[in-house]
Image 1 (cartoon, rainbow, N blue to C red):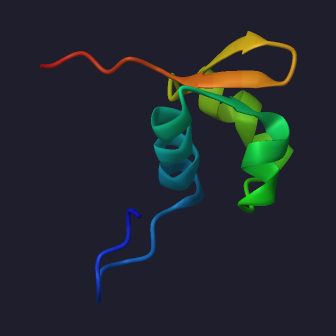
Image 2 (spheres, rainbow, N blue to C red; image 1 turned 45 degrees about the horizontal axis):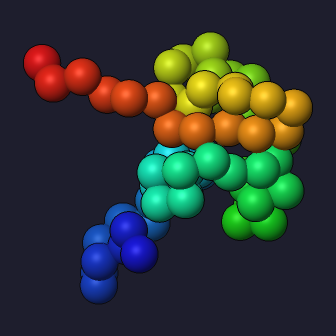
Length: 66
């Protein structure tokens, strides 16, 4: 999806955010199934990349235009 032919492999953070944007709301299980460690989820929330909306549920943070 994100990776173009010959392009760099997307980071774990990029993969997690892309999945959340694609699905709207993702479960912890959805993220761990694509290789995102659970410990990354709290960090990504602290960084403002994901927003925790419930127990085990996350959505992508809205990015405002600069």
